[in-house]
Image 1 (cartoon, helix red, strand yellow):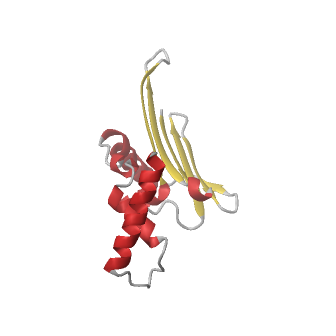
Image 2: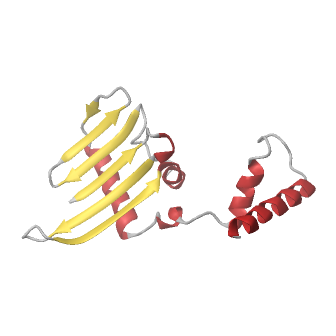
Image 3: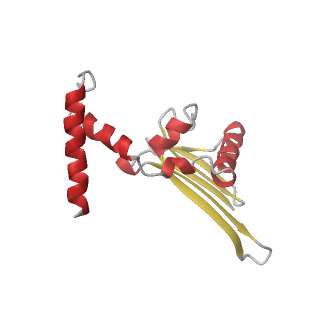
Length: 149
């Protein structure tokens, strides 16, 4: 059984979820693979991804039952066109066989955490001096030390 779900409506819990379950002739599960990726990170990795455009908030596809639907913000649903099915198959392969998106799940590095910490203090248009960066870095590292104790 192949399963893919995109959800773009629940605030910070936006995600893309890929799952493949293989069963033998007796119906016993012989392998199971899945991955859930924050939607914003997925869209950074796949900027040309268009399945969630035009008010579409989720895509659900399951085989072999052939459940194929796109749900829209107004509550309506449509079938997934054949050209989009090929895109979904390719994404499943990338996610579950090639593990291309695994790096998207790594926690931020200390450098990324520092950058995010600094961004919290300044508007995007403001220029940050080296002295301010060093002061904020010291504050950030002090916070890390305090959290560790």
